[in-house]
Length: 100
Image (cartoon, rainbow, N blue to C red; front, top):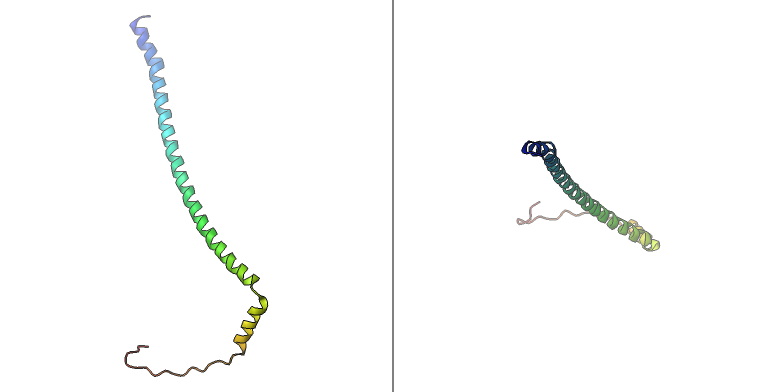
């Protein structure tokens, strides 16, 4: 095996192997960046869902409180508001310091 055979072997085997390794390294680096971006996007969506979920939970708590509240007490309050005579609004005299 002479020097020409070694050079030919190098050209035929080593250079394509190095090129393939280089391409795979670049592809894996790109894939890693894509996964990082996807992870950040997923985390952002999860935070948005958590915020929306917290708001809905708060609204459900208020509704549960309304439903479990003593219905007779609530009805009595509503009737008391209906039975009170409406106040007649009297115009209030404005002093110089009051602005409308």
